[in-house]
Length: 255
Ligand SMILES: NC(=O)c1ccc[n+]([C@@H]2O[C@H](COP(=O)([O-])OP(=O)(O)OC[C@H]3O[C@@H](n4cnc5c(N)ncnc54)[C@H](OP(=O)(O)O)[C@@H]3O)[C@@H](O)[C@H]2O)c1
Image (cartoon, rainbow, N blue to C red; front, side, top):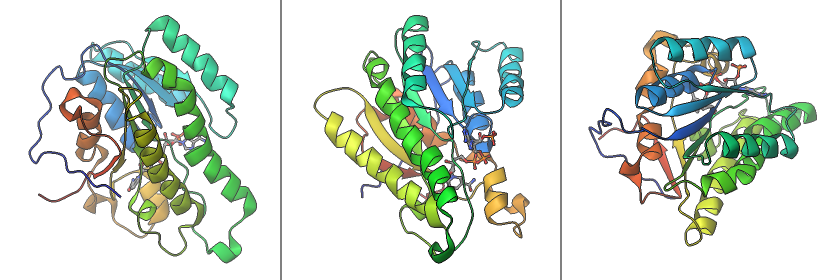
């Protein structure tokens, strides 16, 4: 596995993502919301994606009220999406923008923390559908519009249990191993045929709903906020990381 480190003390330039079109799944969650806001602040047009229209509208409003580029809303519940839905999305992006510069596959379902002996088949299907299959199909369908970008970047949100599995993390850990595999396979297959880069980011323990679900006894105040872990995503979305592909970054690496 290849672990790349972002330059220590990396500071994004003010208009780093100007003219970029960036789609972020899980925009309504902790890390996705912080990342969507930051991308918009840095000049990108963001396509915000989540399953709750009310939460998407709230995020749209926050971006709009700051006078940033108007975002696009793409509501999707990955438990129900099919390849056809992503093909329709691709056509819409092609028509509206002619290209896609950034794709962040960040939505995930934790599922039950339980032993594999007892892991339910239904939960296995749901976690793999949201965390793996939908992300794979979405990426596959969007490749043609990513190819239209001068320098496209695809980023998957990974996890430390996608690199070293732990007891009771079940399908979630397995799905994050598939995330790391996807990155390596896409990156090596595209090395010589396109300018698309594929990387993973492990944000590490972060103060979000998912973390609280996994560790209910933990004090969230002891954890970094989502705003503190998004810098590697910004780095990978930008031209500053133009030759980085097939790598796994950690948001909470120490220098
Ligand atoms: N927080 C951590 O400590 C941590 C550590 C390592 C890795 N990660 C990874 O970081 C990423 C972001 O997680 P987070 O901590 O920000 O979690 P979060 O706040 O729970 O957000 C998860 C996001 O995924 C969306 N989602 C869940 N099921 C979905 C479905 N069926 N269809 C569409 N969207 C769905 C959620 O939508 P709703 O808003 O509708 O629920 C939400 O937007 C995940 O990939 C996670 O595995 C997090």
